[in-house]
Length: 443
Length: 167
Image (tube, rainbow over all chains, first blue to last red; front, side, top):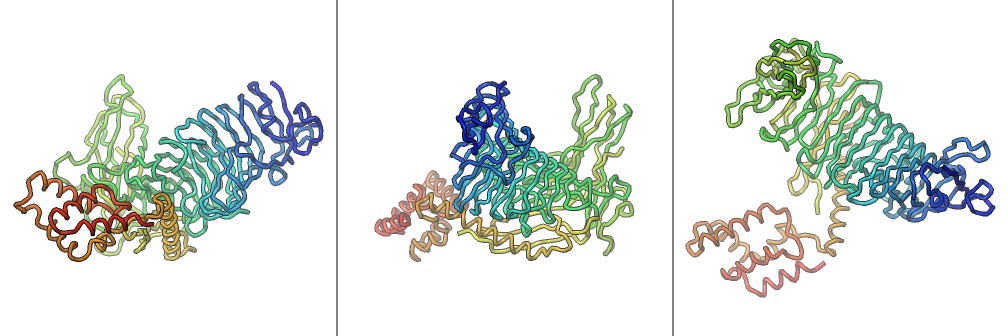
């Protein structure tokens, strides 16, 4: 394991063997790092005009910003150094696994350009404490987190990184990425007016983004949008414990009008001091936590507000995520979920709203069996059963006589053969309706 | 050119525990396609009307950018709307075309095979949002059929085809 040194301020032999003789460019340092676990140390004030590809990895290495004047202490460049260009550039080529700590990458100018953070086919990049500063002012410029080309299997992770933008319409272009910590720099222009995360370029179908503990509060104030129209690429985006702005639209209208377009999940994300909220959305519909209307006896004083789009139907319904119940008995039970229709006293029918239940009813097997109270195909719709009653709900419309309906979706009695989790989901087959559901399986 | 022609929003009557109401927007473009946004949590300090109008402005800007890209890709030939295409035919041909499509199913001079082709072609025309330029072969075939039926002259077809190739 060797160490190489890079410092644009060096005036030595440019051989990379010491700080005195440090390489003047990162490309030299990375090219010299030919053995796995080699380290390229970059002095934190190093500056360089970014070439179209800054460097090409030839081994699995680490590139780390340090302060050569402080015993090589880890020191992110921030505004003190970095790589700058007004032309698009790729940070690192080469199908290798590389950690990049503390470097700064800046994109200037006014023409449409991109910082390419993602790697080549086969690359695995771990960015840590880096600054990506897209101060370029073109509306469709951005930071490409994902692959450097289509049909690429690559991964890039951004840990404790800061991202800065130069126009309200700028965005991230994603592939197989993870963002952990860090945030959008409030000193830059608030991005994301049409969608902060886009999956429309670079990666093939299967783009997957996870975001944990990220500060997204500095998004376009007027129309903050989380996921842009992905047009041609499917995606899965999952955000956990992030700070989001008020008025955030989770999913822009997607070109593909089916569940294959992609889905977004937000767990425990909010703009303020409200915890435990949940969001799930795809082009067929959405689930959001509603703390204004909920089953009074339900947990966490919230319901799932399910809103379907015009894209769903009885035959191709909107399906919520599965939620579970830990069952401890092996005697007959009747799993059900309480639901509410607000603003109308007309019962929902079993071709409009129903549940699917998965339970292990076969002994000595981990395979669950599916039960449902959906109307039989080609059958006749029937009202769902009455629920706990309007008096058991909080916040429903009470003007009118009455102006809400309490019901439940229940499968027929089943006998679990094994102790363990039972799963259920709410399924809505009627387009453009709203159903409130208590997301708890009761028996 | 695609533009938003109608924007509406609805908002929950009830508030959320942290303040704010779930709000849902619906924008309709000039081709009748809906674009929906939400539900999003509109804080008490925010004006959903202003947000909706601002989103319509941004959508129009995005449409214009996409149309410009498509125009560049088509070398400046922005597709015709169906109305613009009908204008190219002239009123006499237009009326004859409308009569033909209204009566072709009972036209004794057409074979079943011919009716099938006309039926499918007519349905595809109805489904299309616009007429690409330069004209697709199936559109030229349609004009050729009109010529056989005496509804249009070759000179007029040449004129329309030339216009479809202008930037």
